Image 1 (cartoon, one colour):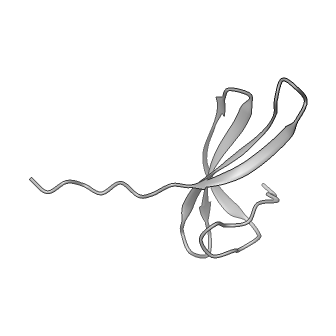
Image 2 (cartoon, rainbow, N blue to C red; image 1 turned 120 degrees about the horizontal axis):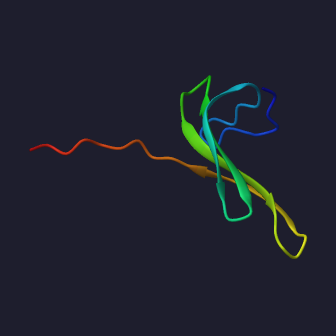
Image 3 (cartoon, rainbow, N blue to C red; image 1 turned 135 degrees about the horizontal axis):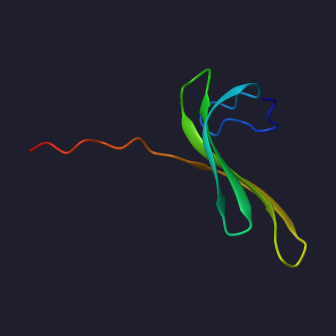
Amino acid sequence: MKNLVKCPYCGYEGEFKLHKTWKFRFYDVSRFECQKCHGVFNYYRGVSPTGKKSEFVIRVKPRVKSKQ
């Protein structure tokens, strides 16, 4: 799958591993993993009800298991 996305961690532009996709309001969301640095991020893309195109990336922090 070709993506026109840049990794927010290392700046790599190329193929990313797709983990899953879902809908959030008017956005189509894809969770990707960078093949170079293995950083995980969400890519949001959509068109608002007023017709404005929007796309952005949010980093996903790894979950840390609590010590008990």
